[in-house]
Length: 218
Image 1 (spheres, rainbow, N blue to C red):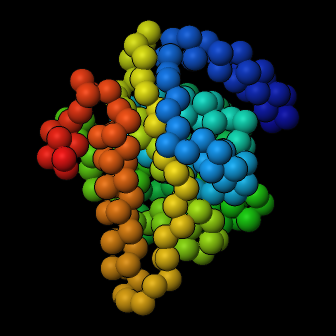
Image 2: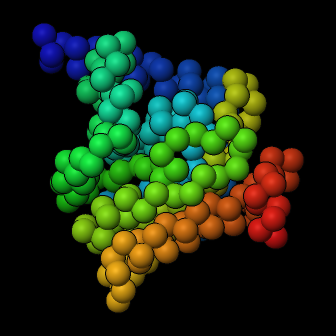
């Protein structure tokens, strides 16, 4: 039964992707297209801000040619109405409420197979449009696997039939093994990642979508 469900899900996904592109039109903006595409074709860790519940499905469909997997909260992954979809597409569950490290091993294993992982370091969507602090846990995957990072800024919350700029930044190669307390090092680089998303929004985003936080960074 499961193989049949898997085939059905893939058919639905193939049909849904172009429909999503019509309902949620986007404009891709590359900071350095050649460099970013070269890294995306290999194994890397992609991260971005989190503007709404549709981000996860849309961003993986937008980057589907790059074989991207994405983490999803276990509470969502296990919902009866969604589990059949999540388990048959490129989703990896993560328990956001308990000290569960299984997601790290699954993530490293996925990266070592030459695939990429998309991560929302905020953990939750922001209600006021300003970025939440980036949780440093996602950088543990980059530290253990040695893959580069690709930052993305979703310029504004996706709305039906409204253009959204998706800004893809240059690849990053942070020294996550630098001297210092490991937790402090990861926290510092997580803050740098948040600053990168704000910089992309400031320089390449639509000025009308600027948040108070990005304006304050000017």
